[in-house]
Amino acid sequence: MVENKKKPNPIDIHVGSRIRLRRTMLGMSQEKLGESLGITFQQIQKYEKGTNRVGASRLQNISSILNVPVSFFFEDAPGDGGSGMAESPSSNYVVDFLSSSEGLQLNRAFVKISDPKVRRKLVDLVKALAAEAESE
Image (cartoon, rainbow, N blue to C red; front, side, top):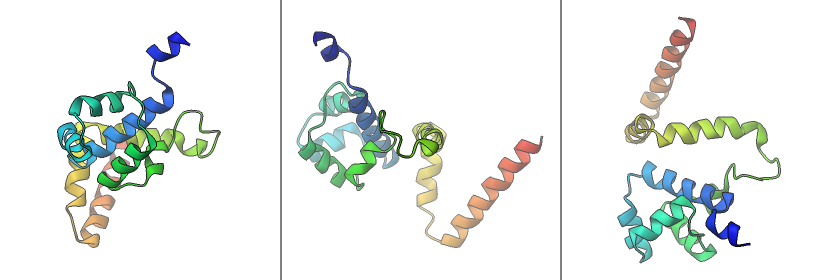
């Protein structure tokens, strides 16, 4: 039992990484999230690393502040019992992309485009560039 206390639970690590993902997608600092919750940024760091487990009421508050459903934090969680297993690799790719500097910059810029036609054209452009890169 003592060994389990030293190593964070994989679910706690996953939930923490999803908190970090969403927080960075919104461009929010650990300090700002901590202030909104009435806790220190160090506590946010511990949640994001999975060192400290996030309680149910605190997770509910975090989901409200980050404007996502609580289920967002458990998507593609380890030991998920096989639900959505076929989508897992692509979902991990999305998480990896959005965790990168380029992915965050692209996401932040894209959501600022209010015209759906412009967004559609941008998606078409990126697809065309990807197809061109594959054919080389």
